[in-house]
Length: 180
Image (cartoon, rainbow, N blue to C red):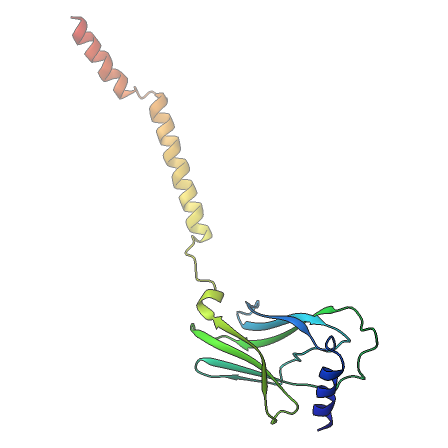
């Protein structure tokens, strides 16, 4: 109860105490898990969104709840400049579909929740698709075949290695026949 009263008092006492300009984004970490990132500005070291206390993943909805703390003693007058903050929650690997992500706060884990941020997560747009590529051996084989065919075409067109150039020979015959 004291937490709730302190939280409400901090909202009434100073508008710069809690975070502002919050943005919800999504990213994939190195392990292939999807993360929810809340970034914003805070004054007096207080944020509107705290680290997640619980995450519930439903069919089309993901609910994240933060249990808020006390006011931390209030904000001095004048309030300090705003500083950036970031809160990250890992959702894990999700099936390719669209979710509504709701981030809420409450005074206790079982208390009533108030949604403070909401965003739409489209998993297929976030997770990169596989791009077909050649293995190292296939790439080496392709390079050798291209070099070999280029060498053959070069040798054939220059008439090297004692092989007469056939198109010139045919044209020489034609010239000889026309001159007779």
